[in-house]
Amino acid sequence: MATRVSHRKASTASFAASNGNGNKQAVANKILLGLPRKEYKAVFPRLEWVDLPVHTVLNQVAKPIEHGYFMNSGLASVLIVLAGGKSVEVGLAGSEGFVGLPLVAGFKSSPTRVIVQIGGSAFRISAKDLERFLRECPVLERSLQPNSQEMSLQSTQVAACNRLHDVSQRLARWLLMSQDSVGGDIVKLTQEFLAHMLGTRRASVTVAAGVLQKAGLIGYSRGDVKIENRAGLEAATCECYASITRQSGMWQNETNG
Image (cartoon, rainbow, N blue to C red; front, side, top):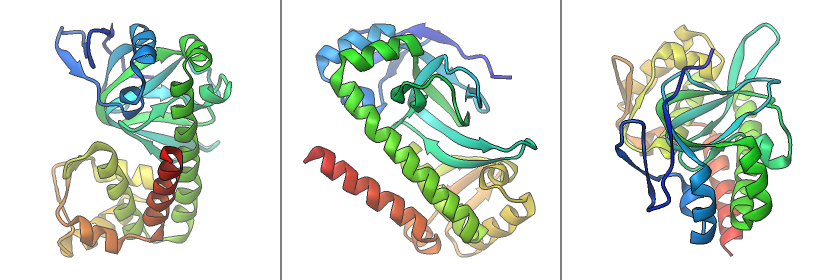
């Protein structure tokens, strides 16, 4: 069952919105920040700022997608769920992205479960409103299309990574991708949750984290993973992280060009 979220209509006065407590929330989502003022003023009255506690379910497998989420902070995990109930992560969405991408292609249901992995916030939009704005706001539509492709890139590369590379390499790749999305040096996660995300046993994550910690690449204390040496972590990961970032960079240059 999804965690309840607090929400309030966004304000068009500036690149900020009020949350349920009346505090101003700066807009950090890159898609929203990239909109021209005309589209921003059209879209923003239909957005709701929502608080996203850890484990909040944003999309559920084979269920109608009622809302899309422009992630503002925190991190959402895209999961493939198997018939027996087991799941494995195939993608991440942070402030650079949008949750509810099937809506962009005109679909109404989700093939994945999307849950909040690191608590944060988002600007929520109804599926009906998004459908209208995709017709009326060309920059918004063009911004969401590459996001769909980047998520597909993540999914295919992560699937190969989970099959071919050892747990310590996969853990290093995951930490790098998470840091890219949320910023900062500390990622708040338990080893149990990491095992769930990487599709392996907790004992395997404990060993892998120990290897990285012994090498001085990360620190771990009470659910906080601290990246101590990013360059070393990049050297310790597999080729998948570089493949994802390289292709994403190429697409960004092609779009900007």
